[in-house]
Length: 339
Image 1 (cartoon, helix red, strand yellow):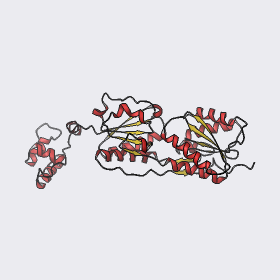
Image 2 (cartoon, rainbow, N blue to C red; image 1 turned 60 degrees about the vertical axis):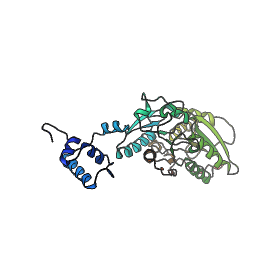
Image 3 (cartoon, rainbow, N blue to C red; image 1 turned 30 degrees about the vertical axis):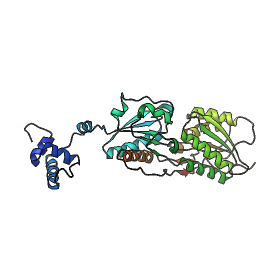
Image 4 (tube, rainbow, N blue to C red; image 1 turned 180 degrees about the horizontal axis):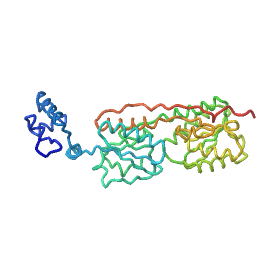
């Protein structure tokens, strides 16, 4: 190593191995086969190891035209669920030498402004979670590899789509409540026009309609506790019969708002009315009584999304199949009181 040098260079490796710098680049870039002999490649690797040489990935990526940077677009940065999606995606990305930039597109609708002057120049790909299709136009352009999470596979702009099995989750909720004997339902529905919430409404309506003698009301609300509180009070504050005996919420946060409204209305959970959520956030066990909800594995969701993008970047077919979800039955659901 040259005197005064604190970090070996590819030239040092070339001199130690008795080869050209071009040969070092081929071997350490794993592009030597057919161009450098196997004994020479081994000699280069041995020299690099003995010298403690590490390639300058930033310079190499610039030469190759790749930044090894992925953009993860989520509706909001402040929810536990999307924090889990990021954690899972970032873990897999780090294992493959990628970094993840997290970027919010509020409500997941409308065009999302790119945080970069040129997304195509700064990014290798995009993972977009729970987004409306037109929210990605300015980020993706026409060229960036895109993986959609929680999106309609039939209408996706992405090269791949990764979904949680939300349809089955709603089936599990409906079957649980129907099995307890509930026949009259209130659906506390998020007012976000995205595929995932359309699926929840559609499947719940179909499952309940398949059982004779059932009714279903729907109250839409922003995904906030205060919004859910107001929507529940409006929906149950009328004397319209039959009164719902179960409230199915699109989200655990909505369930928390429903809890507050039901207590203001003098109703006991679950003696007078059952409540279910969806997500299984930490909030679900902070509520009293603890909330029956559907557990979604956010970190696995992020991991699968990143694995799918890596497959797209490597011209492989991503793994197929939705991620299973599971109903967690707690104390917020019980058979309805006899009329």
